[in-house]
Amino acid sequence: SGVTFFDTADVYGDGRSERMIGRFRAENPEVPIMVATKMGRRVDQVPENYTLQNFRAWTDRSRRNLGMDQLDLVQLHCPPTAVYAQDQIYDALDQLVADGVIANYGVSVETVDEAQRAIQYPAVQSVQIIFNLFRPRPAETFFQHAAGRQVGILARVPLASGLLTGKLTRDSTFPDDDHRTFNRDGE
Image 1 (cartoon, one colour):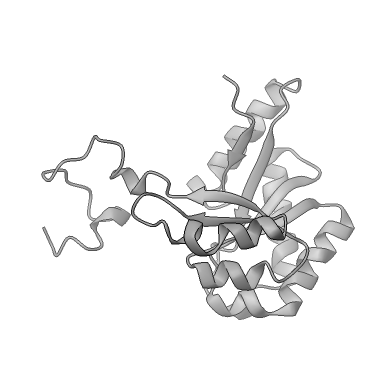
Image 2 (cartoon, rainbow, N blue to C red):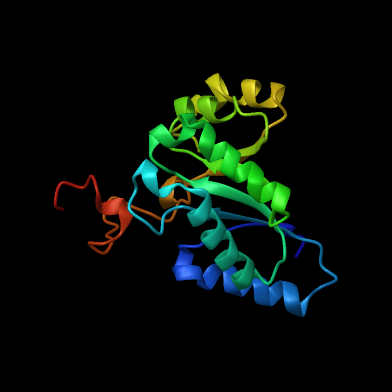
């Protein structure tokens, strides 16, 4: 259908999403697609868990799931804010590129400040950032800076978790474990 870019993560369906994309790639080798995956949410969210050893284990798992010797793009998956300012994190990612297990790396962030910090590192190729009608700040304060550094932008939550689909109403309900229940005051 013309889709050439897939965004996934090692935690989506505990790897099921990656395996499905891998199966598609294996069954359709003539279809040129780029796969971006994310890593880092399989452990406690503390900076000490962001190590080369863990990066190797996570990328090896994603490589197996996707059936790829070299991953196209690996992004840190919304790590703790302190991670974005640690040189050793980017050194470890650079090592994975040098080893040939990933072609490129980037970050998935929660805030513009995290994005600004991450793109100070020259090898960061992409930033996945929340951008939608309700959250326009990246366009106002970040996109031009990213373009100047030739960093790609991936919009996170472009439909505001369904709010911009036109399918939700005031009476829409969600299961207790759905992320959209966090601010409904127990309704």
